Image 1 (cartoon, rainbow, N blue to C red):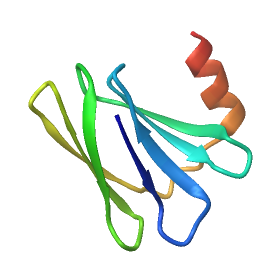
Image 2: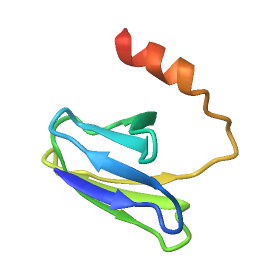
Image 3: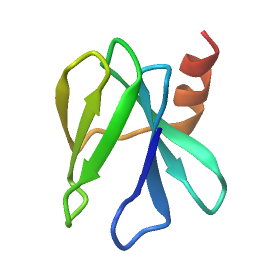
Length: 84
């Protein structure tokens, strides 16, 4: 439904009809992180210029603010959680 690149990187966010936002490595076309929160389709995305904040809007009439944290993301764990 929407795609936004993170400024200065080869990574991007995609918004889907499944209510999820995915963060991708464009060089490997690999999903790095899955953001769940919307109850239905995510229609729009906007990312801050420094890339630390993402705003999403969806069919569920909600606007969500996503902020980067210092938590580490392990790609293997994200793949496993997608399979469950």
